[in-house]
Image (cartoon, rainbow, N blue to C red; front, side):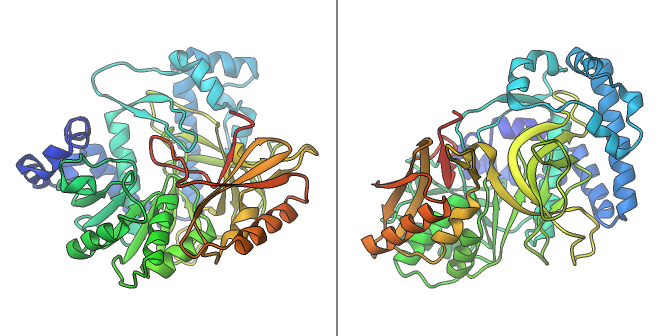
Length: 461
């Protein structure tokens, strides 16, 4: 209950956060504030992270059976769907048997939400799937499920060095009221975090942001990758040299290698990221020892499938499908995230026996397409950006199959020669199947949640 009330009241009212009420709420221990399921899950993850591969597989099979049975016997949509495909809970005897069950996509979820949403009551919490497209779907979850979710997030953060009680600077979608610190930042006393306004971050204001950070001394920057990269770019442009963070934590967008290298150069701190989504079907996270995703097998059942539905092998890419565990309100089974990942090899040197994901390549709908039917991942573009200093920000936009537009925010040291080299390189990587044109803008548009895609495809919107 405290977690639900806190999210509805405190997190949505910055004036309470910075005042006496926020200071009193901060005194409530984290475990009490987030609830019993949070504490239980944290204790469980401390042990399960060191399981053998066989233990992980056995747990996943048991949770899959539990999920399939609950969906089949309690939700008419799943009973009808499974019956139409000739499968029932009795057919799930091994992990591989999950492939006999139908997949679902976002459109199916939207069309059948009332028939999939299984619970009603005051203990439900509503969340919106904002995403980089800006189109959102509102989903209801039990408070206990969201407590569990919070435990997984904190576990992943702890694994890379962020501990409870550390002062953090958060640069995401939360806006600062204009009457608090000129709308630049406010102190979330409950979470012990400085909330930096993403909406007011500019080349002109970045020095003010950096001085505020320097004077308060947060150890961690938590940000969307594109916002963190923009912050670092502005900092570099004004000649900032001081180390202000010990760790950069990213999430909710794809982190490209050029972004990681730029962040580590400017902020002089390691960059770590986790992958997840509001639908809560799959969660991947880094560890301290490597820049590779560990599939959180206790969270849900994740599959990476090629176009023909066959699981991708190590080194191959495919769409991420996920099945949620313990989600009784909106159980999702083999839900297609539209995110594309490359499967990793073996296990990590950290000693945890989780399956590995080498890279999140981007969202399926934001790949560049050509009339010949070829599809190009944003990965083909990131190598062209790496090391270029003339762009404060950049985005590739595709509105039709004959052209892509390079949106550019020019830096102080911009040169047309550098832009021409980038565009020529892009045309070459796209095998000259599309015309590459340019558009100069003052800023790259972002969604209401302050997210931005490196490639914005409007072909499927």
